[in-house]
Length: 350
Image 1 (cartoon, rainbow, N blue to C red):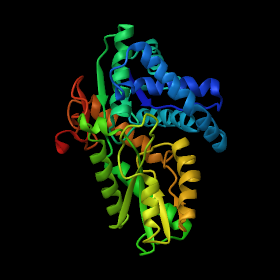
Image 2 (image 1 turned 135 degrees about the vertical axis):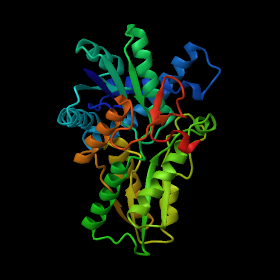
Image 3 (image 1 turned 45 degrees about the vertical axis):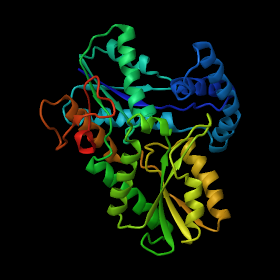
């Protein structure tokens, strides 16, 4: 039996300081290398300081949106993938492993071991390969296996945004949104705006290709909906006062106000609704847009599109096959070259 471990970020489902502070501490600790030169004790103090500072605002965001739906959507996704693999005759069981909430990656590994898995597939549900998401999640999976002493064959998948069916899912979500709002995407008074989760520049300088993946994904999807003049902005989190990806999404929207009357915002790097879409975009960015005189429309995340389970199943089959599966050509990952990680980018982006 194959154990498929779906890896994701996780968000607290209860908006309390008691849950949110430890959640943030785990996130800040995982990125402690952004502020080098500190002792372990200094890192712990810094992590706690950052978490306590950020927590009240995040708690308020969760309350504003009625709690994060991310983990519940991930559970539904795992069930859908399990059913899809079964329909294809693949003997597999799907386990959910979260980077910063429960079930943890270690708990997912233990569950797969207890279920009798004979090999594992680690699949981060992040289409755009990034350092603190895809790469960190796979490293967490390897660490969990080492810590429990389980020597099991492991196939790892990283970036997969070029999957043709995934690009179709994103295209169709934008078209549905535009149709529902009565918006013509090719109208000179309309701008399609892609919002991408930001990343520290330090990771890009260290070799991450995240910004290139984001740019090409936006270009492909824009082409698919027939839009040549689109905008891209990053949702950055400047908790540490370090340099992040540019341009900022707020600045992009303000700039659009001088060229258009309305915007259609697609959170293209997100696969689930969460605080960064339901609060940062639907509340904060909407306010920025409307204050600038723009009509604001936001594309819902197609997390429940039935085709998404097929995309993930294609990746699993390609990872466990000796040769190509579902027409996918997995290549050695350039973002995480150790551990036999494979992806849909590889040498294409070298």
